[in-house]
Image 1 (cartoon, rainbow, N blue to C red):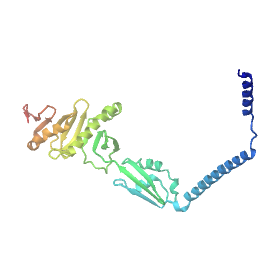
Image 2: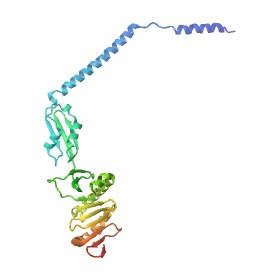
Image 3: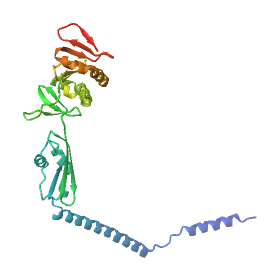
Image 4: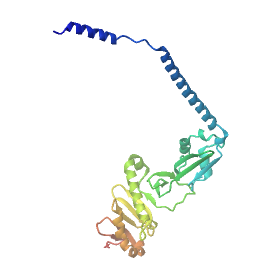
Length: 280
């Protein structure tokens, strides 16, 4: 028979021997701690030294601003842009807040975007995107409108007037129903864009676009001021039909009451002071 009591007693003694704590090697622990402390201290010294060195380099005369270049400006003068930027020559190029400078320049109503860039060691480049008028919107005062349908500037005496005029939207409608008015203005922008590509009846043949939420857009011809009813959509097809007969209609414009393009596959021409409706 096996001596189970003896085996059990032997295993207990073995387990007890495994649990006995070994004496700590304090010298080894000290050496490891010392190495770690030296490493951390070295990293801290290198980092702080690099930071101080960079600060000395950045604040040195080598990076003092000498040249400011203004690019892509046409309507707004370089002097105006520099005055808005408020950049002082001699300033460290790294002390300039480029985003703030750009926002200051964009305060000019003609500038839609200003990008400011450092060019090391002593140059700043300012690139501007200027707004281009697409039409004039009458709201009591006359406003320039750009290709995004944004009204950005009240016209002054020196501003050009050779743009199509948009009427039909008053200030109250613009404030009370901004989404609807903006939708109408975007429709007008789309139609103007189409007219710019036309040769037989193009933008130069139009003096006014009248907007109405219900009936859509009416064009007024430059010669005779004849209304051309365009409605709300399908402008390409409607202008295709008009151009087919416009060469014949053009000499008769002063005697016409209106031209209606809203009837499918028809151009309805109303002669002034008559009841006859001609179809082309």
